[in-house]
Amino acid sequence: MATILKKLSELTSKNQNGKESVSESPESQENQRRLSYHEQGYSMSRSCIGNPQILQSSLDALYQSFERKCKQNLNEQHQLKQPYITEQKGKKTALLNKEEELSRLEKRVVETNKEIDKLNEACSILRTNPETYIDVDTKASAKFWIGLSFLIPLAVYIFIFYISTSFSAFFKEFDPGTSLFHGMFDPNALSKAYEAGGLELGFVIFIPFVFFALGYLIHMFQEGEGVLNKVKIASLFIITFLFDALLAYLIEKKLYDLNKTFDSPEFNISIAFQSAGFWVIIFAGFVAYIVWGLVFDFVMKENADRDKIKTSLKEKKRDILEKEKKKASLKEQITNLEEVIASIKVRISELQNIIDGFILPVMNYKSLSTAYLQGWQQYVGSELTGDESKREAKLLESRKVYDKHVNDLDINTDTYQNKLYTKTH
Image (cartoon, rainbow, N blue to C red; front, top):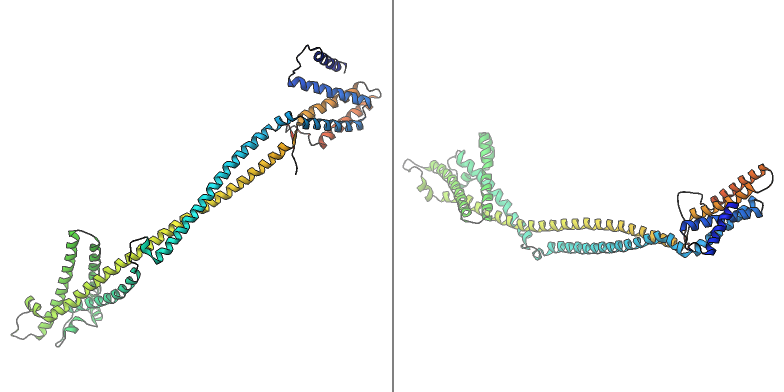
């Protein structure tokens, strides 16, 4: 103890005599503080003869004094709080950036909603006034159904006509007195063709589809441009006319042969051209076929206009779906961003409470309080008179008092340097 007091006396003497600089290093200042606390502990222990109960109150007073000085030392507090001040500045900057990003996302949601409203409005207009957006006939749907109401009966007529006339021309045996009408139309054509054989039945059933296919080709060629397409269309009409002429020729020949006499000449093209029945059969088929082709072309064009409306509506609905997905994604981003902003605000508030509170340098206090305890125990161990066992008991008890003191203050740790005392509201 004499050595410690001697060192303390020398340091004090040097400061008083001005032999050393007044400005000392932090390490030197800390050593002086430890020596001072050591001396205080020694002095207090001597005054109360090392009474452990007095140690408890002395340590409490020591802590209160240390805490008060920490609060009053604004420079030290500012240095201790600097990391939290820096973090708070960074969090505030991050908060501004996140709020700007949130504002941009919310504007994008508003814009997306406007785009969806415009698309929904466009769908409504397309259903009522489609010509506003696309080049179509507003009455296309009505014309389509009217045309279809003519097309189906015409198709049935052509189907019946070519089944009957094909069977009559190629397979039917005419009876004497058969009229032109019964020569053209046989109500039992299918059953008779079935009785004649599978080939005959297949021929009369599928021959109408040849003419339907020709009509479809004519429609397709009409959609194209150029001389070649016109030549193809003319060729198809000629082929159809020639086939109808062949059917008319064969039927008219059979009817002519039933009524000819020995003086009658052989049936030929010239006779056929002069026969009214020949032309009736041709026009009953060919004219009906041309009418069917024109109606079919009309129906297909009107259906194309209807398809334009449906396609446009489908595109608008697809665009709406994409916009809805985009909006959902933006809202999810907004929700996540709001959570991030909320967490940043909470952290800023926590940091502000730390800054408004004070920071206790735990390790500094433990170092000084340990020096105080060492001074206390030094007196008990070296200068206290009495039985050795009593001195040992007092040393042990003083250690227990100190351990209880740091445990009650919740500073019995080496894992953190400082303890935060935040401001409560």
